[in-house]
Length: 322
Image (cartoon, rainbow, N blue to C red; front, side, top):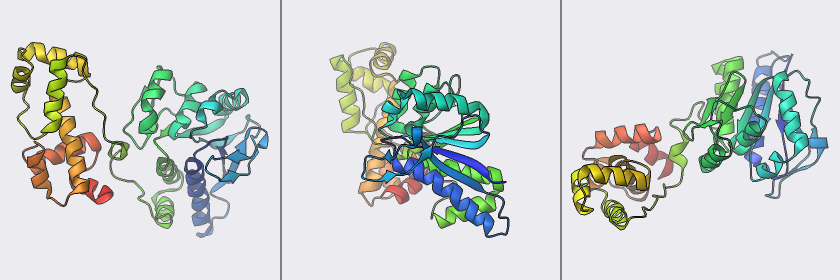
């Protein structure tokens, strides 16, 4: 028997959030059929409240079936995201269906800001979850019972629920689910056909926009921030920074952390990482040169910092984004 998959649509959905997993599941079915196992695979349905046509807001409109009887049973329910998620959260019929279908589905999967639909239905309370890096703060603020982690490409939030990060990460998660269901050979076949990694390196922080550095209220702390940012490779130990702010090191550390939200050392490291990210993509300088210029000292120190903060090495980062 084929595994039933319901992909939920609504006006303003991000098209790739929806189409990406859809193509992975249908591609897996084709790959399995090619081996002679025609009764395996997935039966995928695109559905919306009352079978309404789905407008993605980008000129692509999709035809959908009505949301099926929530009593199921279903194998997988996919909740995509998009700018229409805000209105979708206020659709009582949609949220009521998600609440009703969750106990009858083997797993519920959210993609991007679709995590907010899962959260609105109470599926993420007390769970770790991820979403698009640009919406992580909003998800955490509006659903404080959810432990939001903006780094993973996807995460198993509970025994039943999985959450994926932004847009294309729905493809990553769908491939992982296919691998879990039918093995690495089938998942790898689909990944190769789609010209994708089966498991891409690193987390989604590597794709995030440069981090905006919050401004301190106190002028001496702002001046320290500006000094760090204007010369990331300078000598920025706590003693030097405290002297610039005319404070004792202990008092400076306490005031800086309270004003900026992180300790001086972590702030310096973050500024240096952002400077190195820019230079890796905008120059042809060697990693050793960039590491010295940005204050890391050695290429190995910079490599360890990148792996810890971005999940990839400087060389991998440059290959992906230069």
